Image (tube, rainbow over all chains, first blue to last red; front, side):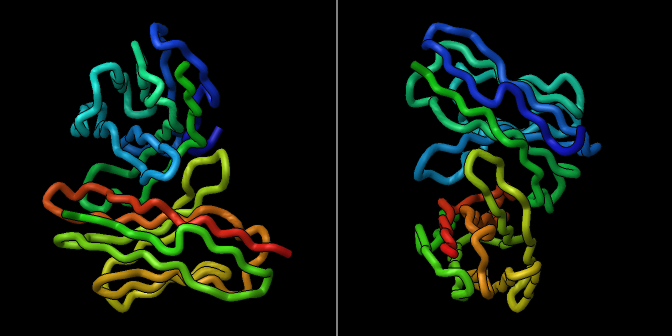
Length: 115
Length: 110
């Protein structure tokens, strides 16, 4: 496999469920990101990991919990979500977290629906 | 406040009808401006990086330009396969975060 792969592609969950989103990058990059994309809104940065260390948490509610066990894998654990959390969740990677990290490689996203 | 505004929100063109998309920005200390293409149901795909005013980049029918306040994505003789949402993002400010615009949805009819 090449690039950035995300699973599952679609997820429907109730507000009391616990689920996880998975991301894997095959590019040898050192930085990984979670973004949220909602209709009519710009992409919102959620978390940044650089060399497995979380370097940014963009005021995200605690019901979203990221995990980065190594530089190739990134998880987003979901717990007690709200309907307004329904969105497309995108994982991305970049060469590193240095100044020029705007060249991101995105996965195809996980479409989350919270009932 | 750092901000990125893209216009128009949506653009419908006939095949072969050239046009431009606009990305205006306000950011302290621009480090780079980025264009992405996003097809329905997929993640954004990186297109270009522009670093300084006057810079231009080209790829097939697309040409991106940058001034001190805005960037244009020119599409020459578009084809239906150019239909997508085009996202602009800037990197700058004290934290160097990437700030995205809402995108322009381009539809090219045959």
